[in-house]
Image 1 (tube, rainbow, N blue to C red):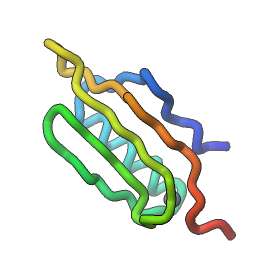
Image 2: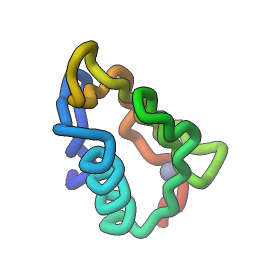
Image 3: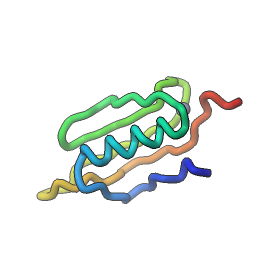
Image 4: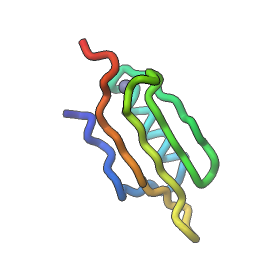
Length: 81
Ligand SMILES: [Zn+2]
């Protein structure tokens, strides 16, 4: 239930904030996070388990520092106990 923290269209004030929130969420779920792409304007994050579909993609908005979530697959299939 606590997994539903992100959604498409969600905004973060900058990429540092976005990364911090993602990392915090993964720590909370006791999972490893992989930042696939960490450029200043494009960020893709996946789950450390490559078979797991969890993925979030965000990019910088034009003329702004703001990062916006473009794609979000919030279901973890990994580590189900
Ligand atoms: Zn996962």
